[in-house]
Length: 101
Image 1 (cartoon, rainbow, N blue to C red):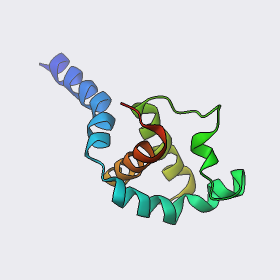
Image 2: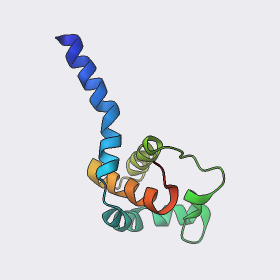
Image 3: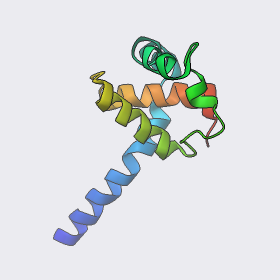
């Protein structure tokens, strides 16, 4: 029984980012992104900061990486987003820039 519960917990931890990603609302994500992300990205890349997402050597190539990146930025900048809000931002970025399946 203990092994089963451990396996179930691990499976849920792996699946959670994908589940949260699929439930994100890109419209809400855009609002959160524009409020918390643009200033930092613009300071690094100029303009509106969107080069962060469109550069040739971008770091994201899967939905899991995108979710992880949004979570890391949230923690680094201290936006204070809940996991649902991170999913909204990831949904916005995916719909607008990444188009990951």
